[in-house]
Image (cartoon, one colour):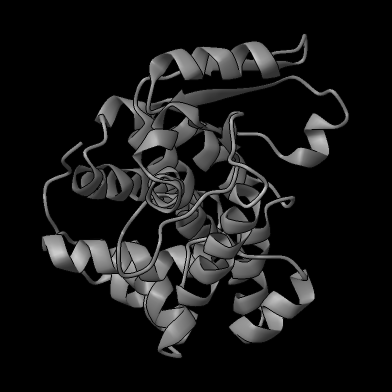
Length: 262
């Protein structure tokens, strides 16, 4: 599941309608997908709550953090966080998923955990584009650092705690997604920089590229709150306005110089 557009929301509703038709749902719902619904700006835990109703609040949680599935299944050491509307549910998720090689920390900031996991995919696309254009580590480090700042600024629209974004669900997930060739979002950006259209890049990857949808949702949140998100805007322009990637980089570099605020 990615940032939900209208057609995906219908599929989401249908899925839970089918679940409820069997007499309700009494277990935990642990969300591992990452995204923001278009137009509404709802995070995925909020979407589930909206679909199932307020009575489901104490069943909904999520897992998020730097964890490529390809490495987890090989039992390579990984650490993530669990969060829920009810903190006690986050602890239950930790108990369920902790293993000697997969460490799960509880986190009380569900919005921050879900938001960081969604937003880092946009920055990963930007880093893939940067590498595809032949730029160096300096460029990628700048994109990641300023990208995290962009995520922190926009996080106020969802009531997130800024410190959450310095942890596994923010900085940690950002690092693994921007630096690894296992990342679909990074690969998507790189393919576009190498000359493929967004549609052709999606087809070659063969899986959902969450950041392509999240760029729409994030820009909607930013415009509504009058918050500048230049990296997100540049990614959006490349994907949906046919902007040349090199021109997008020039636009970023030619922005007015301001004091660095962290």
